[in-house]
Image (cartoon, rainbow, N blue to C red; front, side, top):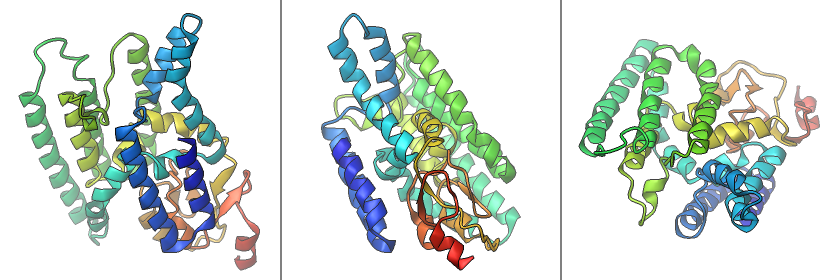
Amino acid sequence: MFLLLLGAALAATRLRGRARQAARRVIQSISAFVFIIFLHRCICMLRGWAFAMSLMGRNNVLAFGHACMFVVIIAVGMAFGRFFCGWICPLHLLQEGIAGIYRRRVGLSSPRLRRLAGYLLAAGLTVLLVWLAYLVRPGTQFFSENVAAVWGLALLALIFMVVAHEHWDARAKKLKYVSLVMWLGLSLAGVFVTNPWCVLYGDELDYSSLVALLAVVSGGAVISLAWCRYLCPAGATLAVAAELAALRVSDPGNCRHCGRCELVCPTGALKEGRIDQSSCTYCGRCLENCGFEWVRGTDSTPREVEQHA
């Protein structure tokens, strides 16, 4: 994990333009392979932390094993924000793969037509996933065996609301903190909470996770990276850490209200040149637009931008 994050940090800060994005794709692909074959599931780091807390003082070695991934990722989050999300997380990569459909939809000039396209996509996905969830429903312990599917269907319901009222996007992003509290609460209560990522493991075929994974990935066709924006518990944890981040994307300070940065940003973290630090996943797509740059510390107006202003 440390080597992956180190390589990503060097690529993000040393490379520019297409080279940076090409390196990001390579690192994301390597990370997905490494996670699936070798490492602890990244999104399960929260459950691992809950297990670690319950084992402290009784089996410290096992507690360390469960907590180490959480500690590394949170430490990086405190230094570099949601860098893990944009450069390492395999779910981010999967969602980006389908985000082109979203970009074509938001490119429609008519707001009514854009909204109608969103409704049709969301309705079709909801019908498909409800039908799939019904087919694979478990016979016992309905809720505890379907937690991941419940989160996936909740995501689609949320997508419907945001499509209908686009200005609700900023408010909906705060729900990821509610998702985090509920996820941790269930884990601490002893519910084995699966997630949209578990189904990718060959020895862990979980149908609830399959439903959730389809909801997360296909939901990105309606709203780009909807899971990362609204409900990801790990993303919420890193969003809290990101408020302390030393490395940030700068606010150019001379916004012309052209809207280019808003179209480029996959998580909706940019609005009229202003950056929502809790939503930025450090993908770097904005860095070649309107003078955005990496900056250190909390200063949002770097020297290079000041010279252009």
